Structures are given as structure tokens and as C-alpha cells.
Image (cartoon, rainbow, N blue to C red; front, side, top):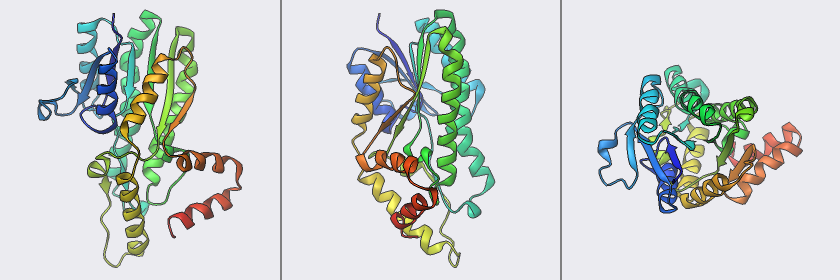
Length: 267
């Protein structure tokens, strides 16, 4: 029997690339989208799901379980970007980011774990971000929500190991996707003390996305993890310097690392 894979946020970007790659490898793939009807040509079967809505999550998971009886692999991919000076980001946008990037994946895990415990097997892959390993200027909220998911995963991973369930983090760097289009941008405020620095940083971030790696690199990495009998706690996928930045943070004094980041962002 083909393994059943459940991917949140699979209508575009990394989620779509992963889904199509696994489909070609013989997996039975179910993806999710808030509006599946907008993607009539999707190669992946799309199920309606909004990660900010608990009932929507439960309904989508139960739909797949009723059809397949078991979900072997869950990929928590749905996420949203957010940029801006912390001082100028509305609180409701900060809450929405955490609802999508942190609380949503937690609710998805809660929805699938009872079935995985019953079958005494399962794999959950949480897509985080290299940005979650460090506080970045004008991306502090995004770094915080993705960093929190990294730590949640470390903890719950130990809780479910006795049930033969594996949970792992995969932190991508910049990939050439349409994530910038769906990202919340705090507006550039004319005359703001942050106008110049935030404007320059925003341009740089958009360039990094446009010049990012091929999403198929993520798909191949996910496939390798699924094939592993003992998935690691953390994986990083992206350009060498992006992954190396995590190593530098570990070995450099905090103030020196902060200076490197400020030089990079021309602050």
C-alpha cells in the first residue's frame, strides 16, 4: 500500500513542489488549501483547511482518515511571512502570524496524533525556517513564530517517541516561491524613523526570495527524510551561507554576531 501523505499549504510554493514530487514517487498525497476551488488543475487532491480554524483542521484530517484509514506522513508546511518594524506592526497581524505559523501546526499535530498512536507509527515534519534560529531586523515576528515551532517540535518529539512516532523540523532558507506575495508588509510610513532602514531591508528580502533556491531541493530533502528510519531533530535546507549563519551564531559572541547581521542589512 502506498504511504499516505498529508501536506498543509500545498496549493503553491514549497508545499506544491513537495506534493508533486512525492506523488511522482508513488505516494498517495492529500494537500490542503483554504480555497481548493481556485486550483482546478492541481495534480494533488486538495482538501479545504484553514490552519487558523481548529474545526477546519479536524474536518480535513477526518476526511482523509475516512478515505485511507491511516495517515503515514504529515507535513506542516502552511505558513505566512510578516515584515516590519515591531513598533509599527498591528497586534492583530502579529497574532495572525502566530495563529498560522505556530498554533495551526500544533492543532494539526493534535488532530493526527491519536490515529498515529493507534497504529503505533507515523512521521510529522514541521517546516520552520532558518530565520527561526535568529532574531532578524524587521522580521522579528516571523523569526519568533518559526523559532517557537522549532522548540515545540523538540519537546513533543520526546513525548511521542514511545509510540514509535517521529517528529522533525526542516528549516528552509530562501526559496524562489510566491511567499513574498502573501506576506504581510507593514507599510513604509513617510517620515517614520524606520522609513529608510526598513525600506532597504524590504528590498533586500524580496531580492533574496527572487534569487532563492529551487523548491525541488526541499522536495528531495523531504523525500530523503521520509525514507529514513531515524529522522534527526533538525534539518536545514538552503544556500551554504544561510546554513552557515546558524553555525556562526553558535560560536560567535552575541554582540559580534549582531554586528555581522547589522552590516549585512546595512543598519
